[in-house]
Length: 179
Image (cartoon, rainbow, N blue to C red):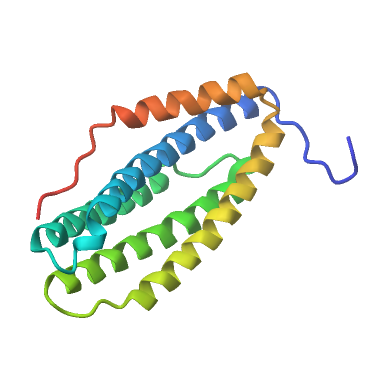
């Protein structure tokens, strides 16, 4: 092992880290599911949203769901509690990413509602928040890669973890509150 290599996590600490990481992967899979639903609606309706009231309502519904999902992601992340020491940097980075995501989703909802009400949305602010989220997202992914290296799981085991998290997200019963 090199002088600056992260030590391999073993024993009880490994079990704790794997349990924590599986929970984190489920949150990430939930976020991906909700982002995909939002993106599908955007692709379908965004071009006609300024001319069509129906399209604008669909975009607003999708933005509302996205905003509520982002708040749910933050709630679930906080519910993880204190992470194992080896996961602390990753945990903090994902909290920053999910917080930035919630801010962006909230601004997206406000901009969509403004458009729906005939006002000019503040697209520059939404874009600024999206850039901030993307910065946090890259940082969180970098921290996650460092953490996974310490776990020393093989690619087959790692893929199984991702597949389980994706399956869990597909059957997750969360629904947004109706406005």
